[in-house]
Image (cartoon, rainbow, N blue to C red; front, top):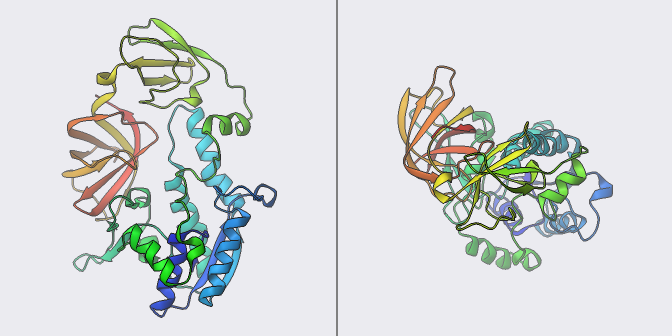
Length: 356
């Protein structure tokens, strides 16, 4: 079962599977109610344009094609989580939950119903099998500028064992070239999808519309408790944010803390957002069933973050403390920290607090 968004990556993925001899079922996931999948919403995964293009690709490839309605699952596992996290003062990463709960959750369940052996997507990542342990491993995609392994750290062994990433070994330029060679010029130059697919404008407007609660302004403080200004509502800010504070100061200021209960932001200078350690929970381990008590790894604290050397220590409650060799900019509660051994994903978890 090939997930097809109508974009170049998923289209070429389906074509490569067909070339390799697989029996391919093309599927577009409708993640919004039909009334919201209107013409012109080209940045939304299930736009009418996306469904149209995916269906046309399937016809060109000679494969069956279906649209499956997952809007209830998407709202429950992704949108509601996104809103809840912001209202609690965290910065969510809905793409990770979408991969875990929708693309390799609900879609994998649908694949089993149709007796499909694998689910394929257009992610830039790779899988392999560890011959010594028999575990399915997750590796970075060949195109490091497009690598999406960070957003797939939450997949279980069963999910990884049934996952295929056909473009994972290709560069983006090769994917676009393959689209042209396959006669898929109409998707060849499509723009990449945005990080948060369901937010068309800025997330602040989206939150205001969807949260259905009154979001109120509050105080902006420095680390000594002095009032420097007013904010428009804590859900509109994230740790490390510099823009939109509206404060004239002798040097740039960044959000260093968010207190939802008091409806206050604390701000500081660049050095105040540089941190050396954090705690993460809800871990998912890929490279092994049970982690060693302490190990060295490279860690990423956000999708575009450069991997940084760190020591990972498992705590008594099975959370981990991560201590970096060098200070990192703005580790953020609610984001994921993902551990690597070279190109191989060891595992990862969700940042619960920053400790130093």
